[in-house]
Length: 188
Ligand code: HEM
Ligand SMILES: *[C@@H]1O[C@H](CO)[C@@H](O)[C@H](O)[C@H]1NC(C)=O
Ligand SMILES: *[C@@H]1O[C@H](CO)[C@@H](O)[C@H](O)[C@H]1NC(C)=O
Ligand SMILES: *[C@@H]1O[C@H](CO)[C@@H](O)[C@H](O)[C@H]1NC(C)=O
Ligand SMILES: *[C@@H]1O[C@H](CO)[C@@H](O)[C@H](O)[C@H]1NC(C)=O
Image (tube, rainbow, N blue to C red; front, side, top):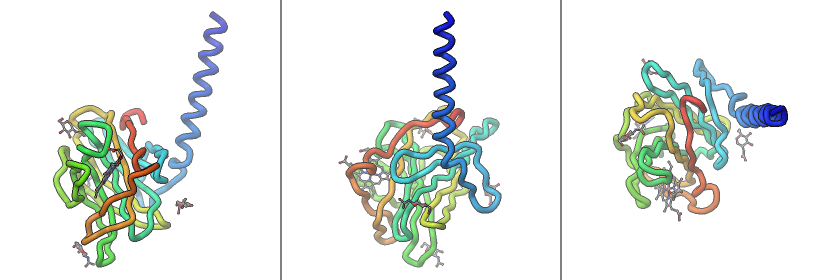
């Protein structure tokens, strides 16, 4: 009995240390202006972070996806409501247009030969915007009301080439095919 509760205590202390240190790096980041996010995770691939605020009363989530990128590259973040990989993902992308302006828009991914043209997602998304500063591109958006709870499969990506103002393909080795996971907007 005593041994069991001691090790339970030890394990929970260890767990909270792990949780605290994994939250540290993204939680140190402050966005310019008055945008504050309560939750964030450092994503394990592609030098990326997801910050968010979940608002239970409206079941909406304000997200900011932030990743290292050069000014000529693109970034994307998506929820996949129907699976764990790329296909079926409901994505938000950001890139610099050929006229120099930064743009962000939604695009559903239907296949591995998808074109990332703007299109409607399977859930509501509004207030999409993007910023580029200090070699980091960020996408901001409001998602929801979320109809299927707060646990989601998500994927993220980056690529170096933009053709006719549309993101072109990404690398298909290493981190670029590992950039997927699950998260819960309610619990982190
Ligand atoms: C022009 C657009 C895109 C093309 C042509 C494309 C193509 C591909 C291909 C062919 C693969 C399979 C690689 C392999 O395993 O051999 C793949 C994997 C992957 N892609 Fe994309 N992709 C595009 C955009 C995106 C976007 C916008 C995202 C994220 C929002 C994304 C996320 C992923 C992920 C996470 C994988 C690995 C998991 C999986 O195979 O489903 N891709 N992509
Ligand atoms: C909720 O489920 C519906 C039906 O499967 C799907 O179309 C929609 O994209 C899902 N929403 C989210 C946020 O996953
Ligand atoms: C650049 O192009 C985009 C998309 O075509 C357009 O919405 C935007 O207004 C343009 N910006 C400038 C500064 O011309
Ligand atoms: C979305 O943007 C509009 C116009 O800028 C703003 O009035 C509104 O409060 C924003 N909505 C959310 C949920 O942030
Ligand atoms: C990613 O961007 C941050 C902020 O500019 C920078 O400190 C860091 O060195 C970058 N990482 C890499 C590997 O370029």
